[in-house]
Picture 1: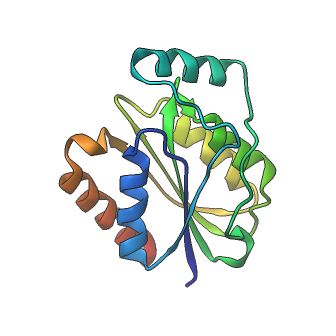
Picture 2 (picture 1 turned 90 degrees about the vertical axis):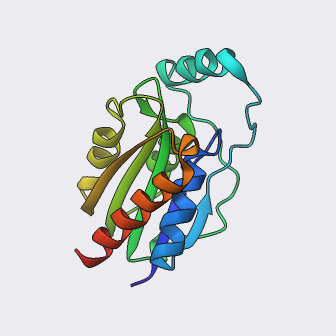
Picture 3 (picture 1 turned 135 degrees about the vertical axis):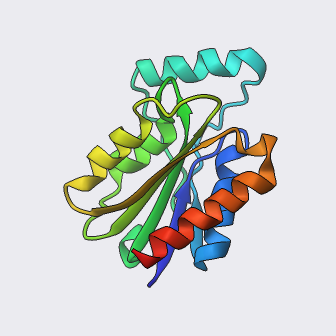
Amino acid sequence: MKTLVVYYSFDGNTRLIAQAIAETAGADVLELRTQDQPQSKGFSKYFWGGRQVFMKVRPALLPLDKDPAVYDLLFIGTPVWAFAPAPAMSSFLEKTAIRGKRVAVFCCSGGGPGRTLGRMAEILAADNVIAGRMHFVEPRRSPQVSADKARQWAKEVLVL
């Protein structure tokens, strides 16, 4: 089964999980990058990110170096921003035709997932099979534990 891990990461938490999943699944990796990559740090990144979500900003993405259409299974991951997917992920989901795939969605946050997993699944469910959902809390605080959890989840999704 040809597998792709698609993710956006601002602070590296989602990247850590995406890499663990990709290693376990033998998957290709597609990291989403915006044309104007934000540089906010500290508390200002939360204000900036929340504003982006509430204003429904959809940043332009750099060209994708992988075509999701040629894969059978997609793992799609995002950080949680203001209880929702990061704007870069929303851009990807709204502008990329994903049809006839098995899709597993995941998110990373410092608290709960909010509406993130539900929104992602809702967008994707009409034309795809949702094979799994998973939330990771602050993966970089316990990288080994988080990576192990990601590997185990990836194995479960692969056998479904």
